[in-house]
Image (cartoon, rainbow, N blue to C red; front, side, top):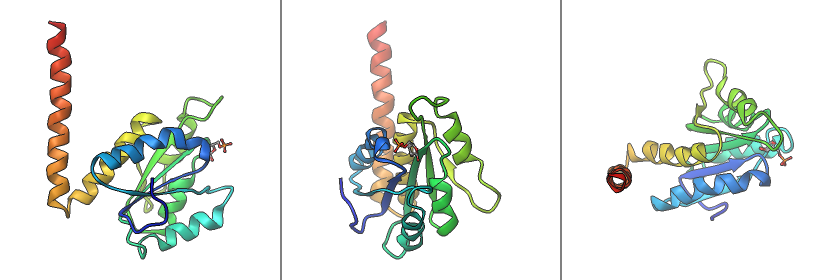
Length: 167
Ligand code: RP5
C-alpha cells in the first residue's frame, strides 16, 4: 500500500476501522496495476486536513478520489466540495448501526451541483469503487481499457464454470 506518492487514485477513509473493508479497494486497484495513495481523513474529526487534501489533490496528479466512511458519512461530500476531480463514495456499515443505510443516504444524497458517484455499501462497494476508478482512468488509457475487457471476460468465465460444475 502506497502513501503520499504521485499516483492517480486516492483512497481516503474516515477511520482506521474502515481499513479492513477498504483493503478490498486497494487490492482491486492493484490487480489493474494501479497504486493508491491511502489516507485516514475525517470530515468531522480532521476537517481541515480533509479539506486540504481535496484542495491539493489535482495539483498532486490525483485523477480520482475514492472516499469511504460510515455513520453520518460526509467524507466523500467534503472531498467533492473542494475539488472538480471525480469523487466515488463508499458507504460503510458501522458496528451497531443500521447496516450502512445511514452512510448510504449521507453519501448519496448530495445537493445538485456537487455529485458523488456512490457505490454499494461495504465490501462490494469497495471493490466497485476501484473498478469505477479504473473505468474513469481508462477513458484516456488504452492499456487499462484492455485490462478492463480481460477482467470482464474472466469474470464471465468464472461464473460459467460454476454454472457448468452444477450440471
Ligand atoms: C466514521 O465513523 C468512520 O468512517 C467510521 O466508519 C465510523 C466509526 O469510526 P471509529 O469510531 O471506528 O473511528 O467517521
